[in-house]
Length: 546
Image: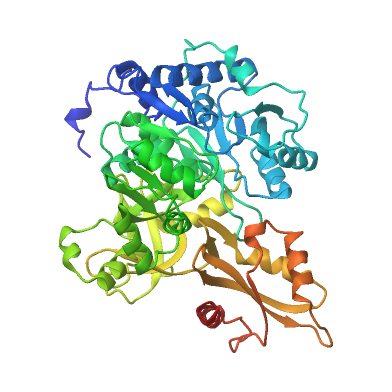
């Protein structure tokens, strides 16, 4: 084998090779545009110089409290400046950021804290009671730091631990923060919804976060100094990496604690928001707002959505209101969106119905994703590009996770054959655009949140009167999808629907409770498997009639 002459005496050195990390985006923004507004939160206006200094102070304070390389810092925060600071300050001291979904129940939170081996928890006052309930169930005993956001106007409970602002205040604004030793080092861990068994911890690395953050800017055509409104939860796949993207383009974050129509419309108009991301429910919220709440926009706002494709009428209404909607697709395992429905200018001349059909497709790969295809999971061969033959959507590249934390068997299974297996079933059209057709794990996406049908079924099976339960997605005008439960009763049993609903509410997060309970004979195949595809059709009919 011949030696490559271009590798002779040409070595990697600190002068020509540095690990890729999105942390450098903030350092550059603060150096080049120190006075540019980085964060808006209510009356707060924070410059990039201040943002960077506070992130370094947080990193310094965490380091002084024992956080080093590979230590987990868990955060349970809404879309606030503190959450943005944690996306930089935690990895700046070598820590790994664990963002917790604020809609989870205490038992699941406790599992995550234990599995991630959390050493410090940073929690907003609104979620302190839930966090305390989770910690009572957990084995770990992390230091708890409380964030008292001035925009929170709800009830507060007594707390004698450290306050976030006091912790940041004692930090060093000139802290010599840590570059990753290797760009493969973990920057964050995010947990899946636990569709089969316990949730899995998806580990992301600095290289992938760097590339996906830049890919966001390129894919969404974000110009320098874009203004981004936070309606997408930052706990969801690290806000699809947009906390890092905005520093790369020296943009402005507009924070919102809650997704409500009036403050969104006000921000869109008053702050000249250019981009936002959200589930179709956010679109419905905007369009259905009273006329005195809606604001006339003097610029087009780019709206990026995932989950179930929005209906044609909603797309038309959004366009009339001043929004340009683009469909994205991805998973926690791909740092958020890695597929985009890149729009062709020629499609604008097509009828509205045809445009809606094209917009419902998930699309083509992001620039930093090296491979995207629909493969036969048995043969690992691509399916025909006919828009009809189903296979499994698979990914390959630098914006695919490191793997599942402390779960080597699940990692091996996910990467079998040299591709990441998404578990989503779809087709690929002749032009190379993919379209999802089903979810092999029967995930229900409600308001942008994943719901495991198995988890809901287990709660139903625990109800004494129920013998068989099957849960599928039912279309919903507001949430996109909600769970619909089909149940067979045990012999001689009757059921009180409201009592069953209460049973579920006591054991599930509110958004996971089925919207409909249908007592019926559940169809099965010849081998006894439940025909969920048939139940999904029934659920569609129920939704259409309601």
